[in-house]
Image (tube, rainbow, N blue to C red; front, side, top):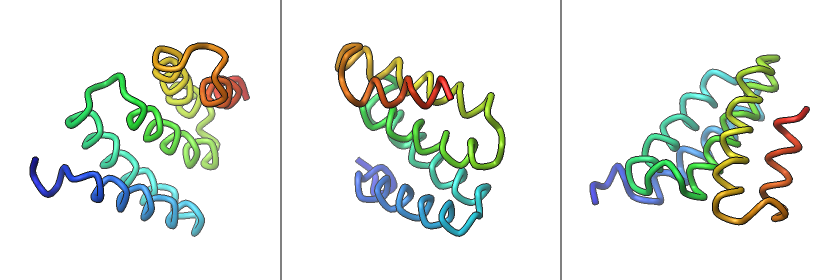
Amino acid sequence: MLASQHPGVVTLYNNIGQVYREQVKYEEALLHHHNSLQINILVHGHIHLHGAMSKRKIGLPLKDMGKKGEAKDVFTQAAAIRRSIFGAHHVLTIESERRAAE
């Protein structure tokens, strides 16, 4: 595993993205969350809980920016991954589906 693919790097990208979102710097937040998603896909594949988490984190600033269609798309993708892992009645699946429906 390359250092750039280490789980700590993913966590760092997510944390920095969250800070940018809280500072209302949505483009910067998206950049960091997309970096996290790319590493998660590379390491774990497309159907993994970490990818669903990254997609959810991408959806939040998109929603904040008023890009509801794009946010709905990534929330729906996160819900589909969570549904395939946990089933339809799991709290994380329900949370993703609720966000997709907003």
